[in-house]
Amino acid sequence: MTPTAAHPVLEAIRGRLVVSCQAYPGESMRDPDTMRRVAEAAAAGGAAGIRAQGVEDLRRIRAALDLPLIGLWKDGDADVHITPTLEHALAVAEAGADIVAVDGTGRPRPDGRDLAGTVTAVHERTGRLVMADVSTYEEGVAAAEAGADVVGTTLAGYTPYSRRTDGPDLDLLARLAADLPVPVVAEGRIHTTEQAGAAVEAGAYAVVVGTAITHPTTITRWFAERVTSTTPRS
Image 1 (cartoon, rainbow, N blue to C red):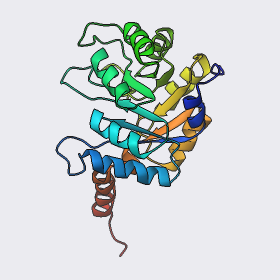
Image 2 (image 1 turned 45 degrees about the vertical axis):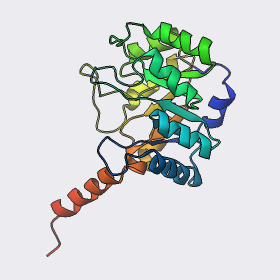
Image 3 (image 1 turned 180 degrees about the vertical axis):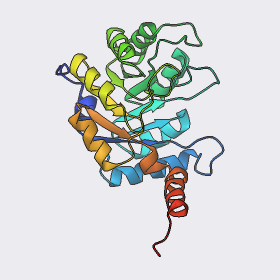
Image 4 (image 1 turned 180 degrees about the horizontal axis):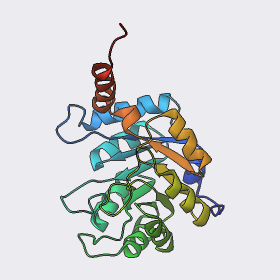
């Protein structure tokens, strides 16, 4: 299915790469100004948009770059921790995000709101778009019906009930892209340029890549493990 006419922010990322600039708590790069610099480096390399988490990170990136900004706020220990409440979503919008990313699964949200209620409130109070991060086909359909402007495959393989593939779940991506009236963004375990291209071929409206570009600890681990596990030629 061809998505309905897109908002200018969505048009800016159509067929393009969005780079996720995030670091985990306790890491040396877990610093808002560092993430701002990482985002600037990604922009210099051709990123059409940035995805980032945390209010201060978003504020600094917004001040530095005039690119579409997908914002979220990871908080709490509950299953739903990606922008888990409406208050988190409003703070993300206030920090400068053009698109507010939220958990789009069917799991209970900490504030008791359902996804449709959260989406509606963000639209009415901020005028910002909402991206629903989902893990299954059914969740993607429900998120579009709830009013989400974008659906992402971000959580595929990261919920107890969803299938985890070695790379991106291209089958899920293709099904959602074919059936939903809103843009479907590929995100999750896209570690090579070949996988990014395969996501586009499967119907992705845009492709989000994070770890393989912006997380040196993981990238180093990939190379270190390959080097140490390879037997030299005799």
